[in-house]
Every structure is written in C-alpha cells, then in structure tokens.
Image (cartoon, rainbow over all chains, first blue to last red; front, side):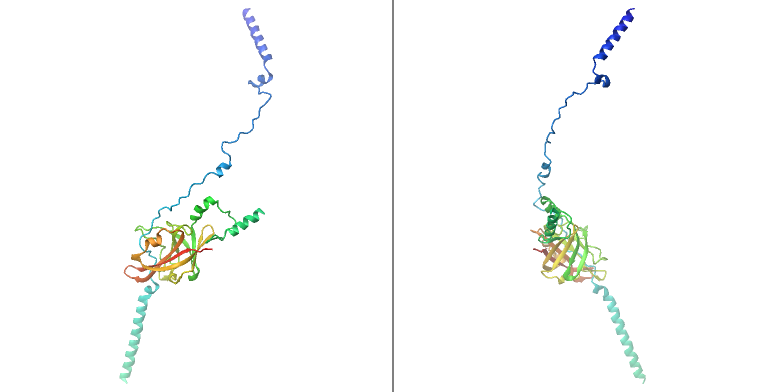
Length: 114
Length: 189
C-alpha cells in the first residue's frame, strides 16, 4: 500500500515538472536563447590593412658584397686559324719546289741528250 | 583614360639613361624594389654592331685554379658572362668574354681589336630590356701582367669589360700571350 503511494507521488512530481518547463526546454533539453539579441559592431583589427603596405622596407645595403675575382689572364683562344694551317702550307710549298725541281732536271736531261 | 596613362608611362619609361625595355605589358616595380630587382636581371645576349658580333650569353664561373672559366673552344662563337661578378646594369664591372678563335675558326671576338671609343655594345637581359654600353678604351696586355684590379675592381657605377685573347700565339702552351680588354660604360641620355 505504501509502495502504491510512493508511486503516485512520483508520478505527480513528474507531471508537475513537465507542466512548468518551457516548450523550448522540453524540445531541446537546453535553455532557449533570449528573445532579444545584441549585435556588436565589428571591432577594428589591431593593425589596419594599409599598415602592411606602408611597413618600412628592408634596408638596401650600401656596400656591395665581396665578389670573388678571377686570377690572371683569360684563356680565350683555341689556336689561331693561321697556326693550324702552317703544316699544310709548308707541305704544299715543299711539294711545289720538288715538282719544279723534277721538271727542271728532266728538261735538262732532255737537252743534254740532244 | 587610366589605361592610356599606364601605357604612356611604360612608353616613356623606355628611356632610362642606358636601359631600354621592349616590354610594355609589365608594370614597373615599386620604387623601393627597383634598385635591387634591376640589379639581378641576368643578361641573355651580347651584340656589337661595329664588328657584327652577336651571341647568346652563357654563365661561367671560376675554374679550379681560380682563373676565369671560358666556353669550350669547340664553340668559338659562343660568348659568356662572369656570373660571380656584377650583372650588366648593376654597379660594378660586369664581364663578358669570348674566344678570338677556336678549332681553327674565328671566334666571336675575333675583331674586338677593331673597336674604338664610342662604339656601342648592347646587352639584352632576360626581362626584355637592353643595356647599351659605349666603349671608352681598348687595352692589350700580357696575360702574366693582367690588370686584375683594373678589370674586376669596384667602380662607382655600372661598367662593362669585354675580354678576349690577342697578341702572338705561344705554341708551347697552346695559348695567346696577351689579352685584349675593352672598357665600356653605360650610354647616357
């Protein structure tokens, strides 16, 4: 009998709780947002965008960095064209002299035979 | 109207004392960056109208013995620029070199000794601009007395050195005994 009373009392408490809660709470299980919302104006950023552009540039060094200097002269010649042909010219000259010499000797021999 | 003004600005920007630009579409760099940016523009070709020499430019550095590297003699018509020194248009002496000959053929600077004060040298750069130099003097000097400080030493403004070989040929070493050096400064106006 006592258990039945306790059961009824519990049911009553539960029903009372359900009736006193707001519909939003019953639906979502959390407090509803307030009906009025305060919209704050956007806060200005710490540094305006133009500050990035106008920031001081990196200073340009006034003294030129040390540059490695080559040693000695520059080897910009692979042998003169005249030098490469010297041997050929000497050989040609020798052949020419030999040819004239042979011709002269032959002519001399012909004259001698006559 | 704005576009017209911008195009006019590019056109008038052509006549910076010695640097001309063929690019009209690119906006000029900010003033704070112009000095540094212009100084690091690589050269791409050299042209000397007086001796009808024209070549692309390849970068060269230092050889193991500290001397200046040169293009292979199998390519005597190939000029080069010293990439560890100032670039043409930058403050300091920029160096462009070329063979007087190679493989039995005349090189790109075969006629360099014919240059005289007042002759122009045009250096085209990778941004499309051209730096015009004017030859001031010509010097022929023995390689064992090469004027290192005079050629590579600091200068107050942009300068150019053209270097090739000259003098008599030493068959024992396979090299010429002299160097021919042309000193040039930017054309003004």
